[in-house]
Image 1 (tube, helix red, strand yellow):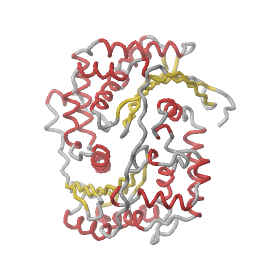
Image 2 (cartoon, rainbow, N blue to C red):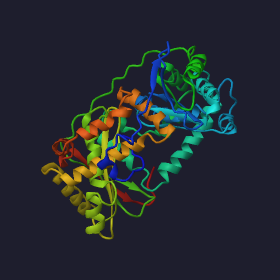
Image 3 (cartoon, rainbow, N blue to C red):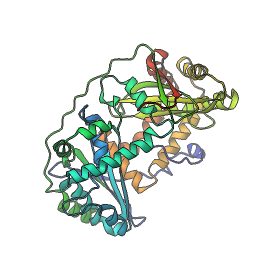
Image 4 (cartoon, rainbow, N blue to C red):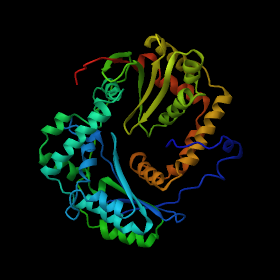
Length: 440
């Protein structure tokens, strides 16, 4: 479920069904197996055109990490019909905006335009798919861009390396052990032919979802989609077979150093199931219960009452094959990291041993009802949700019915899942420490 702004909790009392707008959509395949999803909403004259490619960092050669993220940048370089540097100019000159994102499982490109620019958006994305220019000049340019991004967001950012340290300790075999941004040495060593081969393999219609959401007429949209995409050649079938991880049966202890910080942090992480597993939704509820906001159990105890932590939070990372549940805390004054760990484990142990109160359970249900209502509050959000539910979950209809899963989760199930995944012998305890002149 996508976490957005919350409405007042009264929605639970009156029922969400009267306030939640069902997302109507139509989906079909072109002959080249490009999956198309249409969501028509003529209430405002805007339109989102997006393409979701089922390729992320997990699909890379382990000696060529960072390729998926690199292509997030590279495919803005230009096409056979769009000169280098002109893509963003075309979008902005026509009143639009656009961007792209990459994670371990997918790469997502999108534009938002006034609705009279539907054809322009489709042309842009068809150009990206059919006619990308991948040459040495573009590769060299984007190599420098990615290096600067890594320096800014990872190397020189406080706590910027924590996720890579968690991943490399939680995963030993699966490619999730690598970072999305990758190793710069791998990108430096890659040949132009390797970049071209990666594009040919993954950026094809049969590995993509095209979503149009917003103000359009269906028959006109279908005709334009056919005009711009039907003749793009289908790529070879992609097969995936990733190594499985052995269960964690003994607590993993590790240290990491960051020259950009002055306050140490404790980070506790558990390996969790992939997003299609119902337990992943239960773990989202657990995360909300423990650390979502000032009223959560960990915040009230460790920040408000015992004054142990400057900050406490949790990050449920839900991915296709596995997930991660990460709890982090920054100490107050001389509070030790071990004290923080003990306090965190005390609250997690309560989840394993006891049912949460009926009152806390109802608060959780309130929050998830509210989040569901707001998760589809924008055309851009709806477009991305439709693509993800189809490509990663295999069920587009979850955009309207995933709330049924959260409603059906019981207090007993929360306790059961906490016992299944959140035991001390199944966790990583990472000490994230300050250090000057840390070697990269």
